[in-house]
Image (cartoon, rainbow, N blue to C red; front, side):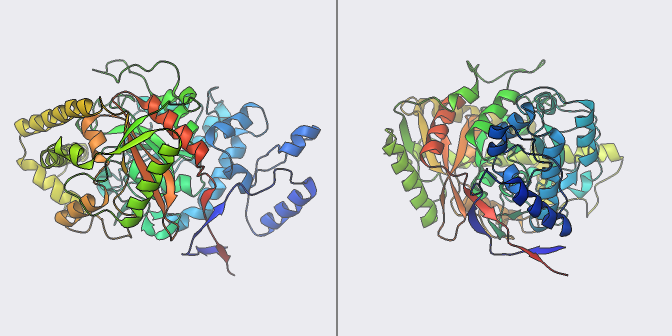
Length: 542
């Protein structure tokens, strides 16, 4: 029985296993695993067996499963080297082993996943890949959508969203829901209802938010890919905290319907977190495209995003912005990481120009941050009121976390005119951003102003002012891309001295995810990060 995981996680090379494992050694190891109560099923045809024409293994050890990205796992299924059941069993085994220590999972969908496989999966780019799905923004028919909230407990979605339909059509196998802070409003993932989601790299630190459960699940090797959404950095923040690649698409690149059109007034978008750049690009190929009834769409992209990953971006003009107003205090390790990332970009032939003061003079940050808060609070209140109407009752004192309740009550004072003013502020900022980016291809910033914070520093049980201060001190740079609608990504290029991940943030021009994927693919090849994995030291007792 596994009693706990050591608090002192360390980085290990997850690909440091030989493909040519002999069948005798494999069977001996499998016997030891079974005797220890570690159940697994499935198969993997390794490189040696493929060369000799031998039959595939009867199970898939975790170290084999974990070294593949989603595209590679789907290839194994497509070529008959493993089955979708094998991958699902491997994912479930890993989930049950590590989730008690990280609390990334809000709900299990094992029966639904097995039924989908038995009924036959569509042939797509991700056929058979197990998919953790964020417990907000991705409703699935007949599956709870709790939004990390007691008020929404046991609420079942009435139908699949457009994004979920596309994910299923691509062959994904949803099998678990991932944790979020209540209603997705924090850059950390912790609450009295859902508990604390822990960072697999260091369990006393946050996995980020609001897609913290998805990022923790990917970092802990439950799956190489998980869905995520981003209304102020909620893809890029947890990606940075957990050493993953996270891209926020252009506004309206991925439809959010059919039950709604704009999430948070157009601030929030859908995508995922991944270990590899190519998985992120292929995922966007699957999810993107205007849906029937949408009022507008992102600019058309020619070809596939996946193909962009291997294309050279040419010589890019990169503006380096060290911070955004009013935050001036950037952790020295985060600043050093930004400088190292800039040097890496220059070594690849790009030009990097420091433009912090010029950039900050272009925008009315006080107005934009106020507009963001107003928009989010109104969206929170609207969702709570709709839930109360479903339940046919009034709001109770224990329905919401303290900060969420304050936000809900405070939003009652806002008017429709103020909400429209906020939208206008975002549109004005988008035009200013377009003018600034006429001189640059990319803007680079720190993803976070500090390394992943410790639990309790930004949480639902503090005061609203504490949360606001915590957000400004933690994420001064990610929200801009939500205000202006442009694509942005966090790339896991650095670590702190203690081994915590540090991401570098890049923003592209509106509608131009292609250049971001080109740069990301180039950075991934020049400075690979996949070998940096958290390693759990399992202690057995009894």
